[in-house]
Length: 102
Image (cartoon, rainbow, N blue to C red):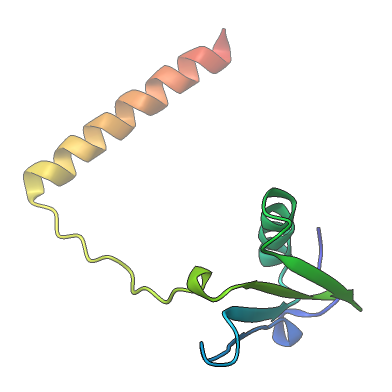
């Protein structure tokens, strides 16, 4: 799915309402991956998610508790852990290459 908008015009706006008003949040986006995710959620949870299509954008209403801002996890690996991960990845790639050639 391609967006009809150039990269500079693509945006996502999330409005989270105070719980005294309602327990919902609105997501307004034209980013294709986000639109696809919201459509899947709407199909899976039709009572919780509503979507309105508008000119390449969608406006979705979701439960307020679904909106979460979380920083990226910091992961510090030792040299031994890095080496073990590299060996595991190399073995996986060898196995996959062998399976593809069969």
